[in-house]
Length: 317
Image 1 (cartoon, rainbow, N blue to C red):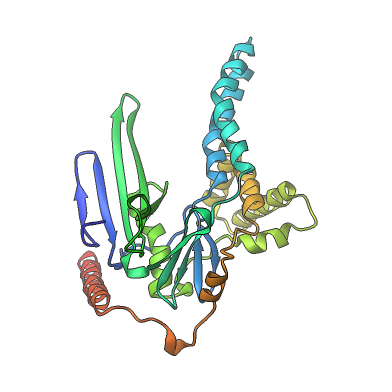
Image 2 (cartoon, rainbow, N blue to C red; image 1 turned 120 degrees about the horizontal axis):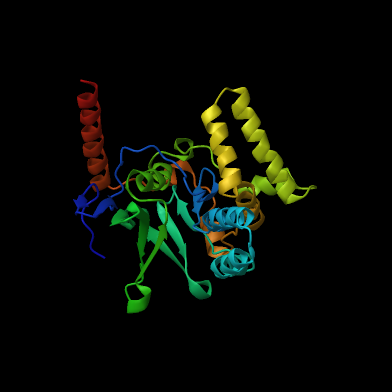
């Protein structure tokens, strides 16, 4: 799959594509796991998943709130409730169906071997060299009477290392609905920074493996509500009123506690890669056996870091 060099940006009237890899050079953004994609993190590997039942709930919840408000202020709410049930019913059924399906396996980034394990169908998996992974942030805008709407994705692609693979089994990619642009770059930086710097470069994230232990012995929903309320109280005590307000708005208009509860329920613990070869592949190596960067990547990173430093100097001047 041919892609423009990393660092290339292509802009059109209503779209923008930022090519991030290969080679995986710095984007200039800080790592930020905006979609809770980090499922496991240690000194050897990073598990990234794109299952987010919580996001689906937070998209549907505002519709529930609006329809409930309309039914409350309307003298004859029956028609509103019937129409609302039709509008909300279909996506709600998809959410319920998703709750009873197995969570897709994560993609595992091994920083010591500089390889990526990509699970495929029927128990198959690929071991892809890290420096061959492709990544792009794509963003599209549309204009209507309601104004301008912008949507975007982070798309990460992998090539089957088997030269004899069939045409329909040569490429695999998965996307994250994170809005494109700098937000997608920040999400990509979670993977890039982990592989090139280490786990200490990543922000503190939700730990789904410990989440079940924290809630063990009590109702999951009640436990999440307590955690959510604790966060609001903590921000209020620290006089971080804006952050507390965002949590309150998220609870009322986005169904934050319910979304978190379903996410914890499905991803505590998250699915693991239990292939015997991958269990062995995921074990730590002695430092002298760690795979090193290629000379091409070393040169590309040094050049990119010099460019970012020059941009910072210009901004400060």
